[in-house]
Image (cartoon, rainbow, N blue to C red; front, side, top):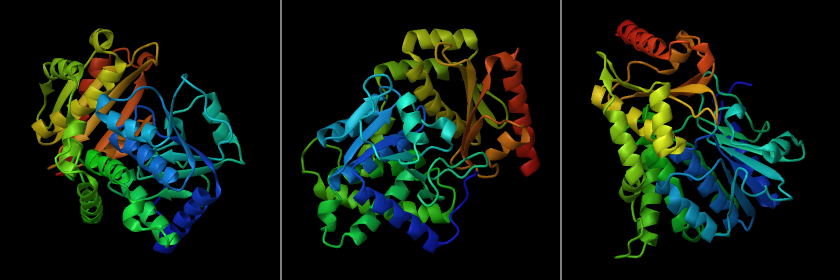
Length: 387
């Protein structure tokens, strides 16, 4: 079933109330996000788990594997607060899970899962709760009816911020400042500023209003609850600096990719053929290539003033796909990038107006560079037609 905006405030409040009921009544929760989790996804997993721990519940975060070291502070916070981090193939999903949170994931096919997670998702006795801000044309629900907090927002963490305030309102005996710990504020801010690049990629006035509201609230809480003269992250600016920080290996990979950039009138792009992709994966690993390609797409978009485009081959031991990432500049709003997917009949992809990703099996493209350049030309025509 395709995702759509919740039609009324009353309906949204009922869904939030249903989710809070489950958080209060059930004892053990598994939290999953999407494959190749980004800033908002990891922050959503951490903040939701911290909320559950504040309610004295058991919480386990399921990840596909180790994440960027820039996010290590979030996982360290989770472990310190008694939250289990389970990596695919490195430890079982805990026994007795009665509810699964599916966070920041556009559609079921993108959920990070193994056999145990698939079994939980297929068990009608296990409640599936979904929180997500993706409403693109190919997005599909993964949660149970009545437990889908799926709505337009600057980030999934914005929706979790709303949920957290509703929890406090429900439990009137809780002291608000005590409930919103420094770690909850830090996690929510990470998702808010990371997904929007400190508000640069927000699309509507509504998103800007809510972003300003929530970053203001949680930034003040973070500042209040961080000891002065400590070396801890103390503000949303500190968070943004941290998540933009490259490791030595990532910087080397980034520089190699940037050396390959090419330009058309509206698109600055990097195309990695099979041989170059294999070379970089052998040198740095697939995780570094995936994460760096996201940063490169952002950089190329800003350099172009319109669009940044990146393509690379997956490691064949993982999949046989060619990956594509297209990002819009923060100052370019003419083209809704989702129209690229619909105009070119691309089924295996998704995103939002300012950023999309899609993938095509290697065997379907005998000459992938020619296809990539044809995409660039057709995107140029879409931009021209929109003027």
